[in-house]
Amino acid sequence: MEQSPTLHSSELVRGLQERAARALPAEHVKDSDGWTLRHAPGCSWWIGTALPHGATGPDDLLRRVAEAEQFYAAHGATARFQLTPGASPAALDPLLARRGYRRSGPISLQVAGIAATPVAAQLTDHPTRGWFDTWSAARGHDDSAAEWDLLGRVDLPSAYVCLHEGSDVVAVGRAVADTGWAGVFGMATLPRARGRGAARTVLATLANWAGAHGADRLYLQVERDNVAAMRLYQRAGFSELCEYHYRTAD
Image (cartoon, rainbow, N blue to C red; front, side):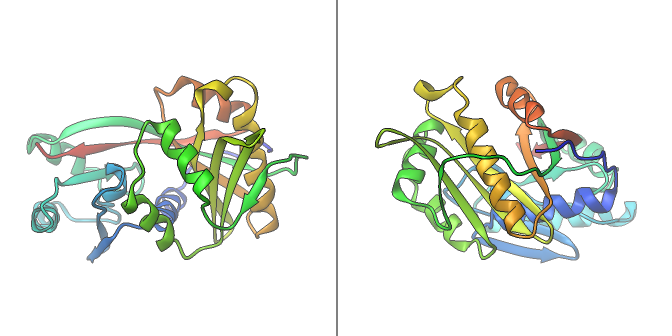
């Protein structure tokens, strides 16, 4: 993969976060005057966060927050907001802090260009049982019907990569192509296979697939305190576009 030029554009940031939401489709989604409210029972919590994108006047902000809180309350869920510079109203973060919302993160939104690399890993357009079991085991999660259902809701071109060690799948990842970009998700390696280039092979396989499916750039999201992952992506040519964080209601 090639180093991508730094692109600091609010439209780009917002567009990538909205692509990620399409690649991680929640079960319940509501458009609230441009804010996307998402609820994904049984899935990882960040899939069910609100995306408060677009300009909102200070006199209207509290009403918008109250509407989002009502949406989550109606689903018996905790209200959470994903706050991204350039996409979310600047006044929203301090407003949520005053309302007692806890902050978590930061998360790094990263981008890279694509260069073809010879690799050898199994690739399919749907999740296999081996892919899903390795992904779940590497994260320390049990099999989840809700997560299977989420993957089934993705209606964009997708790739699922499995790297084998003998007959065992030891590393996985997936990508979703969307209007010139491909998002990288589900990167996971079993502990016994770490430190030997498995993740690099999976990532390069996804990049090759993305280039063949009309994408010339990659994006991904990674926790900034995940040192090993940050190092992997830096070596693969990714650069940070911005940081973002979450606010969760008590």
